[in-house]
Length: 354
Image (cartoon, rainbow, N blue to C red):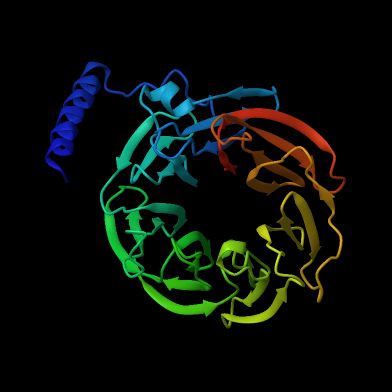
């Protein structure tokens, strides 16, 4: 623990002890429950400007609360927030450039703690058996220093670092394992790491630049975008992996080099993915890819965040120049009809339901 954090902790404990001495209890904060009935939008802000934020949307009352972290706690969230995760009644926010994780109470959004050590270029977070697993690129120019950091999700104590291949990005807990998609950092990768406990159990090869993970009914699904045009463009793919054998049992590949799927999700035995602003879906038992989209998210012209939840698609769109506030569009996944529109913060990159 750094010296300044040590003295801050002692000071905080003295204050808390004096408060407990007054009436023997810690009163519930005035805004407890304010952020319980709705969902969160994480806004990464502009790189290097420290203007990340969190929006809270209450759809029942059609209300939006902007910048709730800074509004409640009186401090900025930080530079380039990259992920948000829930553990019990707490919210963990990964702030990439600031190299930290901010932790708050979900209902009130009051700050509980900040994790700053043992993080270098942190990206995404998931939870398993009381532990928080966080992907880290390390020095993005060094392909050999990437890792998954493990913390106790109750005490926030650092547990260990698990060395992994280059560019660990999205991470998913399923069963008793952790799955990590290696997008590639500053380079490109095409693997999934399977972590059991604190060890890499297996490395599975999939398509170039895996960008999404989803699991259900005994299978892990992976969408891979393929290489971009400037790197010798290649078609993306969708991989279906048997979770009992950890083998790829089916790989769907695009017909052309310009086919770059993303945002793969599962719901009601259907696989959904996007190509640009087009939404495609097919049954998990199908042997071929659909030829036509289900619908086009015409309003989400700069698609930046995507979530499927209870039959609705939540599409976050950045402003045209990526420096202004974005918007969230909500569509019915069956009909494609636009149902609601909300304002968000700058560059909304994720929608999160607990």
